[in-house]
Image 1: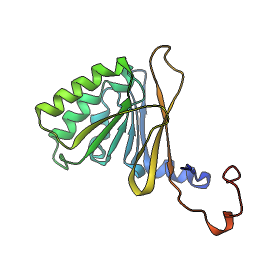
Image 2 (image 1 turned 90 degrees about the vertical axis):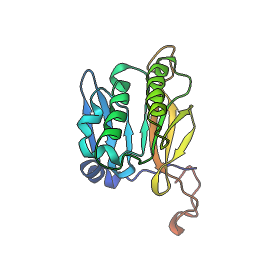
Image 3 (image 1 turned 60 degrees about the vertical axis):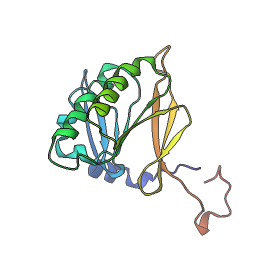
Amino acid sequence: MRLLFNADRVAEDIDNNLQALSWSFTHFLLWRGYRLQFDCGEGAGMRLDDHIFRVDTLALSHGHYDHCAGLLGMLHVRNGLMGATDKPLRIVYPAEAAMMQHWISEAQRFVRGRQLDHVTFCPIEDGQSFELRKGHVLEARRVPHLPDEPCLAFRVGRQCTRRRPEYEHLTTQQV
């Protein structure tokens, strides 16, 4: 798998696809083009407004309050608003994060109690990846942030199975 990034479109992608909020007590980033949200700080569900139904995958980086406190609220908002309340949602989180278990356990109780079968929880480890929409891939990488807790950074790319003719003579490293 190779992950590619189109630097020519960065400004356009940011203008058209990102919605973010970062304060001292809440962090989240919604990348609308991939239907992907990173983290879920307090109030994220309400701040996303009707964009909340655009999220297919929620990727949580680590168990700090400012990155996870909005998880249960987001599930409440998605379940209580008029709209696609049965739309699938995958919640990706660090597999071995003890701090994360509080947030995940609460969310799982909520999901079971309301029989929200369309919400799935996916523990992820360093180097593991998930397929997103249109051939894109979300890959997790462990990063140093907490001394005894895993913290994941994520990158998004496209899985390529063949090269364009003009690049066929290049090695993988050159590409």
